[in-house]
Image (cartoon, rainbow, N blue to C red; front, side, top):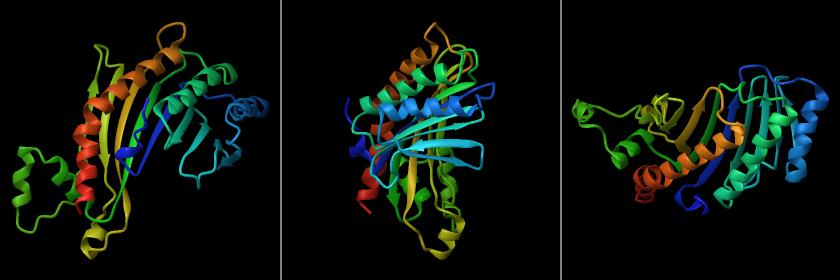
Length: 247
């Protein structure tokens, strides 16, 4: 599988597992889990705690590409920034889902939701809301509002969420996040900030099947890759990249 690095300044693949019950808090249990990850990825050597509620193990964040994993009371999170390939990112997240149930005593019953997110970041200095509107267009129902005297776009962050099965347990969401503020527009001083496109596939509730974690991940990965390559990249990511390159 190819990398998506050609489409944006940065891209990343993140995994989030939300649980109904709290994760174990035993020191030995938690350290054993992180040691298993470090054994597979020796560069994950930065271990620390944040505010006594989150533990994290990371590679060097100053690098262009790095992995990270964190544990909170009811959440396992992991990410891979700028992987060389989707296969590398998927392999990392598969290891998380193979390791966490065993070391953290997770059950497929104890699952509120599993998210797989593809993120695309663009650095852009200017009114990001205006850029998104020009690159992707505005619904005809709202387009006429832009003709109001003195109108300037201060917020335009299109999003859509879809259920992909009859029970609404498998869902897909696409969201664009801009970081231009009213103050930037008033001062006409725009810092170089990230403009982000997020594609999230999510499974709600108890995981199906004997191998629920791995089975669910494969479903989310296949759904996310299809949505990215057939819809999000050609219709959102590439038009934004082109609009930025022409500025």
